[in-house]
Length: 96
Image (cartoon, rainbow, N blue to C red; front, side, top):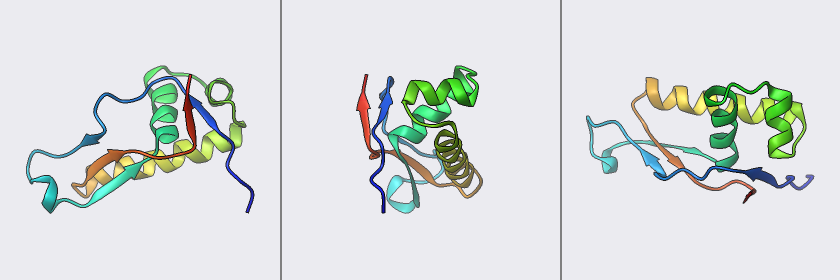
């Protein structure tokens, strides 16, 4: 398997875990969002960048960006719909 290309992220989240208030963290399932998935959502949804421009910022191809963004959206939707915590960690990233 080919090694993953390093992604360059600008923003590291201040909080690394988000959880619903209805249950303690010990009783929740956790969805893990990587730093590159977090950055993809930030660039596409918060900054409103097109995929090609966001991919350039992460120094990856547009199809790779699309896969990362789709994975992130699926994980976030799973956490919201199924009442799970979101923990942000990991990924092959370097901070700009």
